[in-house]
Amino acid sequence: MAGTGNEQARKTAEGLAYSSGFGNEHSSEAVTGALPVGRNSPQLAPLGLYAEQLSGSAFTEPRRHNHRSWLYRIRPSAAHPPFVRAEQGAIRSAPFTDCVPDPNRLRWNPLPEPTGPVDFLDGLWTLGGNGDATQRTGMAVHLYYANSSMTQRVFSDADGELLIVPERGGLLLRTELGLLRAEPGHVALIPRGVRFRVELLDADARGYVCENYGQPFQLPDLGPIGANGLANARDFLAPVAAYEDVEGDFEVVNKFCGNLWKATYDHSPLDVVAWHGNHVPYVYDLHRFNVIGSISYDHPDPSIFTVLTSPSDTPGLAGVDFVVFAPRWLVGEDTFRPPYFHRNVMSEYMGLIEGAYDAKTAGKGGFVPGGSSLHNMMSAHGPDRETFDRASAAELKPQKVDDGLAFMFETRWPLTLTEQARDAEHLQRRYDDVWQGLQRHFRP
Ligand SMILES: O=C(O)Cc1cc(O)ccc1O
Ligand SMILES: [Fe+2]
Image (tube, rainbow, N blue to C red; front, side, top):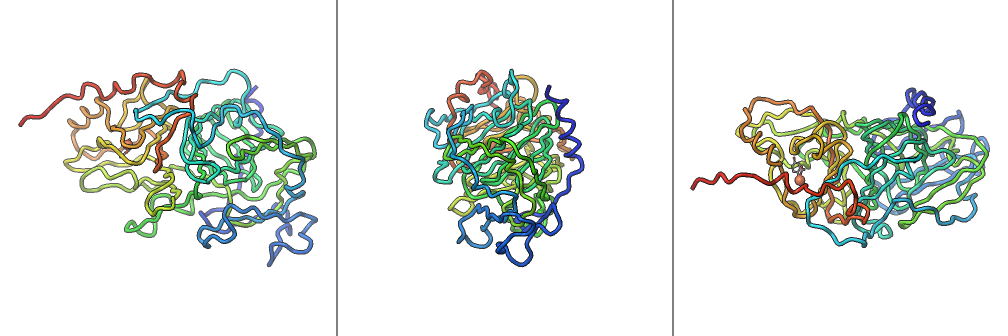
């Protein structure tokens, strides 16, 4: 079953070539001479290919926000029969109107294991989100749990880009622009509209997805940090061209304004022989993140851990930030070192890729890999009781925090849950208890 069929995918994934950089123009050809020189759209494209532009931004957006790629393919994407509605599975979209927004602190155990064969697409399960997919604002949080590779079908999302955060099991992403390998500890981004198939490198695969309806993720400005630091542009890896020249029935599933639609092509739609542009998928290894922190006192705000940000129309107010809590040293003097108690106008969704998180007690019934928490706008949270007691008494020698990898999707709009997330068996019903028993220490 799963696992055995994945050896081929792993072999393929191991030798992959990449093109490095963030936001730059890449170009690649799988066959020499397939990429036109000096123009995008010659009267006849080389080698009998079709030229096709894929635009992720309006033609007229400022140059720094302009995203498009030119694809040179065996057949144009336009050659397809009508799309018809497809099984929706557990995928939901904004606006999320089934539940009222909930001010409670919420936490979930990992998704339950699937029973039958489930591929990445069927394994997607929406927790909630905000904004409106048709307005290209906001975001959705999905989790996935798959035990089979996608075969003879590809997925594309017209509603937004997909930031995939594997927690368990490696993925081979076969995209129109080429192949990417994403292991736990990496993140992969599939831009809006790019078609892709997910093959598993291990027996099963589990993780998180941020579907960003808003402006594409970009690197945060560094301000006084300087020219280097946080996620460095050169560590983002785009694929090189790789094409399938295969005839046969291929289902293209398209998420459009919240609904899944499908059309059957008579050939593989991953038939791009050459391409150039900046609307590209990429992978990034979170272990490459250059963590910056305090070397004097106080616990800095977690905005210093921002890997990628999707700005909204208001400067400084992100539609969504992707933030990582990576291994680092803590050296603060006279400082409560774990995250402080706080209430935040931004809404915080957190997940755990491996190990433990320094503000939350690990172990069964706690914050565990594959689990997640939601601290919506202004909800009071911070270190749990055990963490508070431990950190208040800790000897403040330099300490390496290297027992885990956690992340946050932080968004300016509160998240509203789906019904399935609110009613989930794996919702922890007594999460509030972690803040019970915080003793009074006031001595006036
Ligand atoms: O709530 C959390 O654990 C996330 C978080 C981490 C941190 O270091 C400071 C503030 C914050 O919201
Ligand atoms: Fe927080």
